[in-house]
Length: 255
Image 1 (cartoon, rainbow, N blue to C red):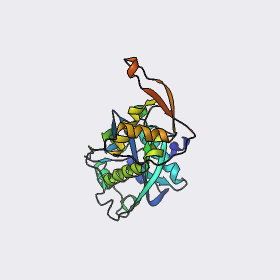
Image 2: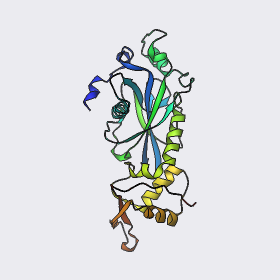
Image 3: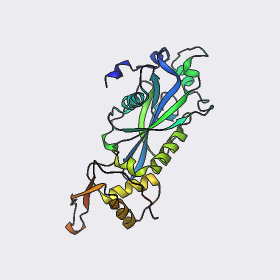
């Protein structure tokens, strides 16, 4: 991603920039899956006991989707992953706990009261579904810690980022079938049990094994592969993979 050469390397350089789109920002809710748990990637601000989803601003000469991809790349070093716009956050009070002001004070950076960084921002929310095991996360110049959290055990969050995660999860649940199929949440080959555990982690409730398997197979989106031998041969489950050209259909799970 060659456009990363124009990324701002520190907070002072950021606030001195004048080529951002005014009153508009990007925030990315990044989901992962690990040990049967749905995870979300969060960043911790320097010198502040607050966490946030990865986000940033949009250059005047930058397409919105490109800005989202760049933000994801800056925070995770991942590119070409599943990324989708899901909601626009525009509550007039969403930035009242002005984290930017606290960061500037900690860095002894003075800006005018009417500076763009203090103004109201509407944020376009994107979410990404990534392979937890392949993610290389690193803190940037504005954040000191980058960490995965269980979706049910979130820390204190800045701005309206708790609402962002909740709405991102709701969108994922409503569109679970084609989202999971197009994601990197599972390895290329997986067992039916692993797929069911992923659905259960996203939906937040158990599913009946027979019903789940019957309805997943009825979609004709899976190819059955060789057996996965880990012990007794008569208990070896089959491996599956998603078909590339399958059409997505909605499921109506029986509880």
